[in-house]
Image (cartoon, rainbow, N blue to C red; front, side, top):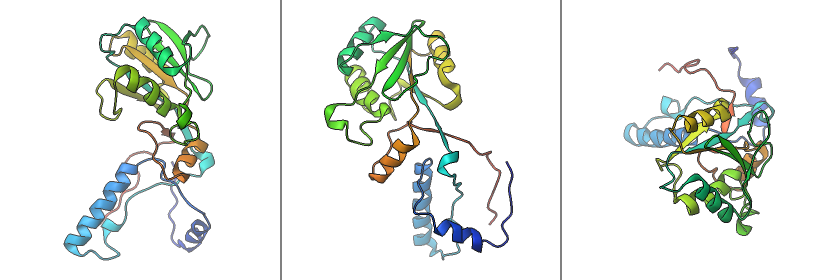
Length: 232
């Protein structure tokens, strides 16, 4: 990382005024927590405009320098259902066939609307087609939403992926190798490799005033923790 100290912010502020909008791509919960803390402190202490509680640390990236990586899933418990039974139920619920993948190289899916499932040493291809009433929805048509709505919920009874202990999320650079490790070691019954959410999909969800499903994006680059601090 390289850091420049800005001694006269006027020109920088002027450039940012020309931006039509900015998007909170990551850290929604932290931003909301900061806002609630600010309201509490202002009510309690009558904090003025210059109070530290009116600010929190953030970083902005140009959209062409932001990369979204896949957020994969590992399922720890199938509730007594065998892998062949699960594949059969998955095909019926998704309304498509589940075929074994016999390719070489990284088994990660190479297009939207596809996921790859790993179990018992084999990879399978899943086609993720949103339900008819969700095809025009920016959120409902996302691969991660289709996976939840048409597989995890109806087949495994996973109602809330945020809290269900049967799910583990494998993000970013850990990739398909981590899914293989979790399954082969017995820590998970199966792993599902997702195609990364695109930046256009992310912006479409935000422009529609909707929220991204949980664990649907892994952003790069990441900043070093503690690189900048605010001293009171």
